[in-house]
Structures are given as C-alpha cells and as structure tokens.
Image (cartoon, rainbow, N blue to C red):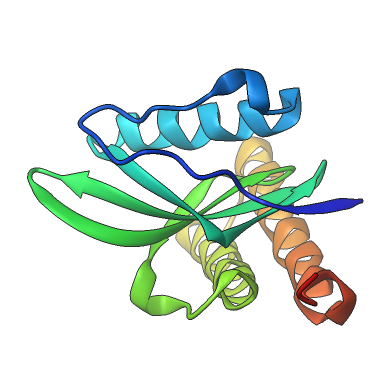
Length: 151
C-alpha cells in the first residue's frame, strides 16, 4: 500500500484541482468527497496537503475547509473502500486520530441501525455489516505505526 501526502489546492470560490497530477484512484476519492459535500449543501473550499493522508487503494483521510451557508469550518473527510463521511475538525487532532474517530462513528451508526428495528431488513443488515467492517479496518490502520511515521 502506497502512503503519500494528499495534494494542496488553492482556496478560491471554486476548488481548483490539477487533475492531471493525480492518479485515477485519488481523483475518484476527491470526486466522492466533492459529491458528498454537494449532497449536504456544502462547498469544499480547501484541502490541507500537510494534514491529509492518502493510502492507495484503501483509504484517504482529508482535512478540508467546507463552507456551509457562508460559515467556513475545518473538517475531516474519509473516502476509499468504505463509506464517505465527515466529522468536524475539533474531533481529531491529525489524520491518524481522524481514523479512530471515524471508526467509532461507524460503530455508532451500525448500533443505531440495529436498535432501530428488532428485525433488520437485508439491505440494512448489509449496511450494518459494511459499517462494522469499515470500523474494524480503520482500527487496524490506526494501530499500524509504520503508516504514520513521517518520511
């Protein structure tokens, strides 16, 4: 698994990305987080290349600035072989800590799905299983010290 810093982008009204400098997998991850933001009514303003971490082809953790109705906030976003999601910046001090936070969030979501119904429909059961697997996989990454050493 290749570990590399994420890419830096200019902060303007529109996110400027030099797509040609990105590999296909990283481009897909950026499109997923942009779509996630758009779906929630947010504008992606900036991505920190120093704080973000791309672990091709498993996961990418992005420290971003999002604009929500004129209010800009720092957030962490995750994408890859797991559900795309976001937590606000104060929840994690760095990308490694964000991985732990997302793991806990995915477990909570799975527990809420299970508690919502005594009989879990198959599509919800599949979603629960995906969340639990993502949470477990993230914990493995979190505890793998070699992934987090500075180069």
